[in-house]
Length: 235
Ligand code: SF4
Ligand code: FES
Figure (tube, protein in one colour):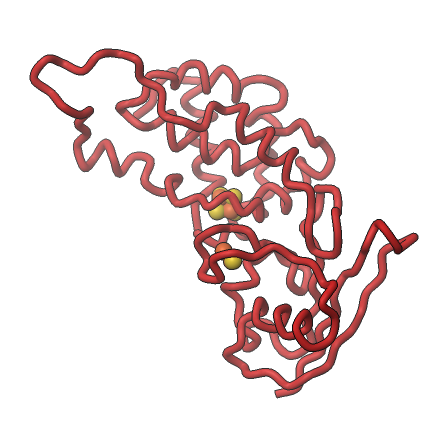
């Protein structure tokens, strides 16, 4: 089938303003959007810039707006979106070149929630590891699936308006550790989330949940954290 790919372009070294370029070529319905971008880069313009790594929905590096919605280019097929395709960078982060945005503010917010396992208590004398029941593991299973693609945070109107808002991805990571029965820093993370840059800024727009390529129930996770702040309970 014939596809028309309209791609956002901006090279700060030569362009005074952003513009779009359009490419027409033959593609298969089963081609991924990432394949189309590689085709443009290989056959039309080698300067086209975008991030990608695994090409299999694992690394999270190729989130972008495809026909106005945040998606991973490697997980969307031509037949999912049709032959008229507009590709733009994520919103809310500074554009570095073409489809590449500056991810530093995103990762700065991520680091604020202490995204690592914290437990300095010694193990009991007869134990070699910190044990956890299947039920305890299930409590935070959903939020372990995050691949840090930023599709959620950059679809959030609160983040667009307040770049100090931690954003759904950082909150999802906080959830993953707060409800881990082996971790000892839940109170510290809940305190971080209770600050003005935290979960109170979420107005339940639901964009994050719709955008997540891992189908994490982000809005529900944020609701659980709000409830834990009120009740002080983690179950
Ligand atoms: Fe991406 Fe989903 Fe993680 Fe957000 S929660 S960064 S959309 S994988
Ligand atoms: Fe890794 Fe798409 S390239 S998730």
